[in-house]
Length: 386
Image (cartoon, rainbow, N blue to C red; front, side):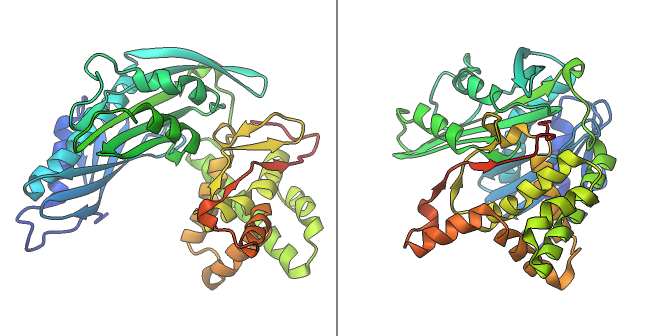
């Protein structure tokens, strides 16, 4: 893959090799180096490291994990500091191994879990929660030696409300205080929750810190097979099929823009896609997904309203983030060539968010200060949550 910088004058060693060897030797399962990845056959997990930045005394490493049983690629970013590059890389790898991979090991070995139930779209779902160690850096704060459930206890009820029918989800908690500056972050499937991040920030506001202290922890939440409902877009083949349907929907938005027959877009998408639920989801969500990305400085509601249904968190809708990924994969793959920017603008222009943002800016408001209310959609009577 060539994702690490090769040997340079200030690196008397290969950083990639050091990371691969550190991960291979540190995971709690038999592992082998396979090209620029580490493969764990017992868990059927492949770990793909990427160096975002490596200097003489710091390392910023990205780690991607894949498993055919999962419907998503897991991601973690780790930073290490040290007196030299080796030490910095070692610190970053240690952060990854002692928290993220320690939680993965629990999940794959089915050990030390908490059982829970959730309800979505009239169905009960049962889960097992695997809580990683809390990794602390800087000054010692809080009693993490005995209480590894503090953040889970704080957020449990809010996380459960965000569970739908997914095979699994993972939650990252990061809490840090540098003198009076507080950082609280909660990410669900690598999507930041502003509401839960604020709870984390409020929780640590009274830390007595002279310089710097931080905590990091992960929750891996896996659904029991007996309550998991079938998903037509599960697995690699399913994701490819969903991407092909998303392209059809995008093409219909392009056609509607060319003919100015915007009111026919929904029907044309339904006629072209033989999955009526996905067709409605594409019509409702694709423009808003593009607008949220284009106007990312604003804060958006974490849920949507779907007709008579109660508010539903985006995390709960099984197709929402896969549609998001498919749209931008199409752009990244160059499917629309030189017309990519124009297509992007067409989709943004079809969104309700675009109208709200334009009104805000025309009134002299700042996008950075905007907190947009939840989007309200009116799907057909045949529409079903899944």
